[in-house]
Amino acid sequence: MNIKVDRLGKRFQREWIVRRFSYEFSAGQIYAVHGPNGSGKSTLLKMLSSHLSPSKGKISFFQAQKAIPVAEVYSHLAYAAPYIELIEELTLDEAIHFHLRFKNLLDGLSANDLIKILGFESSQHKQIRFFSSGMKQRLKLALAICSDTSLLLLDEPTTNFDKQGIQWYRQLLQKYTRDRIVIIASNIALDFDFAQHEIHILDYK
View (cartoon, helix red, strand yellow):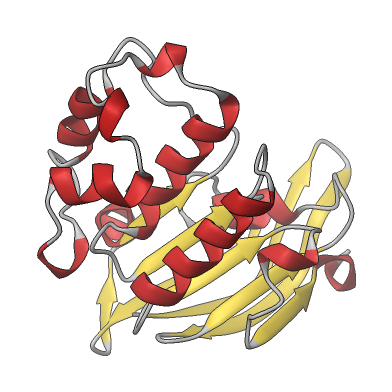
């Protein structure tokens, strides 16, 4: 996948959150979007996912040089963010199988493989509402990173993580992001210091 962004802008009432953003995202590259809280990082990711319509400008998506209609972009992306909620009444096993109704996993991974990657073998039949905040964040990231998609969007990926959780996240990205566009929004360097490209969101105000 490739993404071309032309003079993108988003305004809420009279305030421009992002303005005149032009960029090209290419497969196999990791991009970091950083800036202070409230600077527009999440807004940019929501527009790139087509969950939020821009006020100005255009985003074009291509797969093998063929344009992807905006209505079909969702099938090519995986997204993890603090504001994307899990269905907490489901057990871990049910949550994974529900996810598999919409997305396949990478590299022939199975639901059981994903549970092992998470390290949650003893919690397979536990409802998500009984998970700690760190466990919920691990599940969000594993579902997104291990999905077979061309585009991976991660917003504040290490929220609620300790040192061990951050290491797990970095190892997971290293293993499962080959040939994908990965865009990470964060103001924490450990979330993105391995990225090949950095976008300073305050440059687009």
